[in-house]
Image (tube, rainbow, N blue to C red; front, side):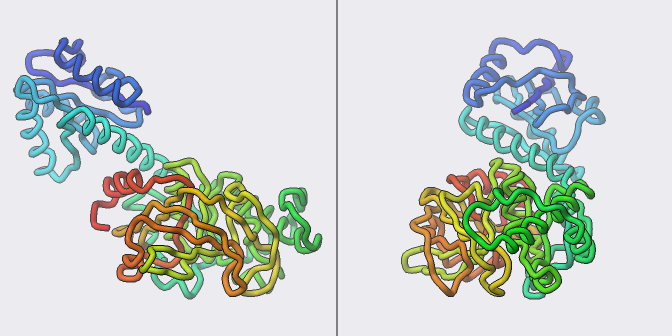
Length: 397
């Protein structure tokens, strides 16, 4: 983390050396964080997180004198000595009274370090999202009646922008696509079907590069007839490539999956909750595409609903996972740590199937769902997701 700090102290210039008391306070935070807090000019915001260290009482007017050099949100760090908390409370009251956002970082070292870590990750995420361009290939599928956010609202809250792309453009790129190596899809399967699936992958990739997309979602069922194949394999391969890609035009799932990638660096599995069992707090999750990198083994199959093309029957590792879903209005989310208990092989479900034991109450999904597709990724990250999402969208889950 690249964290910079500027000091305000009554009677001293903001960039003077810190005295031994406040210096020890900073050193303790650095030890807990495992990284340095770099002293910087008050106008220097070339970092993941900028802290304003209020070192003493009487710093209020120094804040006013320098406020044009500072940027929102204002993070005021204080150790409470020399009336620094009193000054911070006055400054933060001024900030909020003027409709601005900020927070006082005060408490024991563990708490302060945790908040700094969360805020740094939050600011990193905001910066990455502000650079994000999502493609929407075709409109969302007709059955996603609650998963279509307002482009304007997403841009306002997260900074993400969108590019609408017609399926005609996808079809044209498919027709001119040069197939990449068949070894990208391991396993025995019909060569002609592999060729079509890999041409779809090449078409998606070309369009993503053309528009500088960070990710995209596609109305994939509308490709079944004109291309006589599915997007399942192409989406799997692109998620392996580091491009966030979701099916069925599910924009809310795309946002969720991309946040996972930015926070953890991981690809993730977009899945339908197929069965929910409140009695033992388990959920069966299934879909026909999954990043190959997430699988311990796989075989190729047809798309479940259509019997067409190439889908991925992935076998995931039986280990800890997180399950996450953001609502389309960006006001709510569901997140839980969990564990994959086993892979399933049922004839009436999409090809990749897992049984997951949740830690959070699964009946919440039945009472207050955030949409259909949920995003599954390895490791326990629920607490980190909660802290970051609460900082970005608020704490009303």
